[in-house]
Image 1 (cartoon, one colour):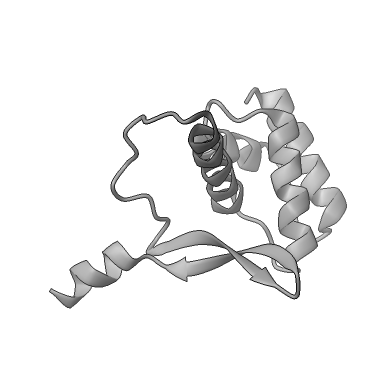
Image 2 (cartoon, rainbow, N blue to C red):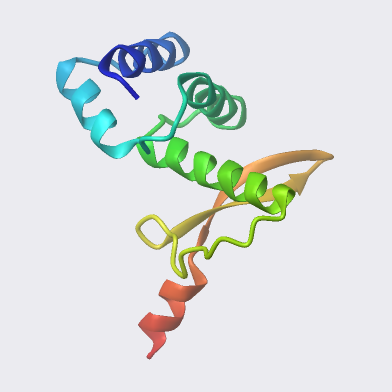
Length: 120
């Protein structure tokens, strides 16, 4: 994403969450964390999704996780058999989709690979 697109994304987030106050440092930091193949409209959609499911503040990891899930689902739908990373968690947690009251929500769950390696 370009600096202008990142600024638009952070402005959108600020419109949803007045606790979030972006500045030039946050634009630079988010740009360095967000995937290079992430499109602005997708990022805005992921932020919208986050705030429809949670009243907690958003972090780049939320958008990155939703993007990874969408890319993985797209690959599976196309039947692509590209090798996937064997370990894809964020600080010991992964994002999972769950059904609750007839709605699909995204939730964090402990990474099983991290949990297994800690037991050894």
